[in-house]
Length: 257
Image (cartoon, rainbow, N blue to C red):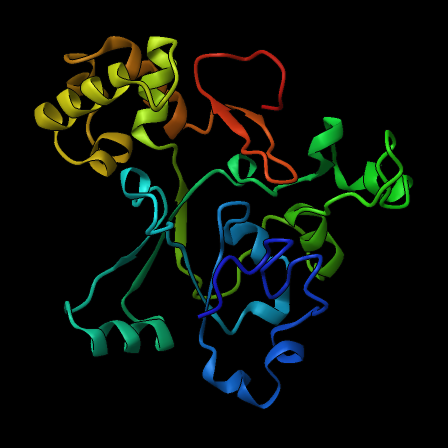
């Protein structure tokens, strides 16, 4: 399964890969590729715009070298817990229930830009500039959104028949950090996150399933943030050229709704 398929530097469909399709990359080995990993800067809704990807199961995973956030993206199965059952379901889609995703805007390569010059651009602006940084004149790093638009052959908002669903979430420590007004890696956030998990249960349950009243008993402000998250009522500052984006639930300054 190719990972982070849209990432500019290393993704099979990234702007610097030289390939515009899975078949172009893998040639006669394509038949052995049955699933694709979305990466942080894309989600299934974006990939569904490219009909050439319809035959692949879409999965999502997190980097194993970052233990505290290893679950920020995940793939959900209803299947037996063994290798062969999981492989079968990835090939057929039978037990694949969907994915939990970052908001794509939070990824490091969602839109185009040049980090050294502080330039962040949407695809249309990049096309008008001929792909060159308006500050230094060098080539911009073309992000995932541009690549998807370049390869798209169907409008946004449509999904292939039988496609598994997905949901966009924000890691619990990031929400806790927002409610406390401190950085997500601070000791204060770590302690509060541990308290919440001990009182309420696993992080994914808190973020997506637990009644808001139960969360409010532990933190009224967190319940407000999670309520907005579940409704998609967030502010997005897209990431670009290796710079993570930001998703805010309690602030509406800047960014896009």
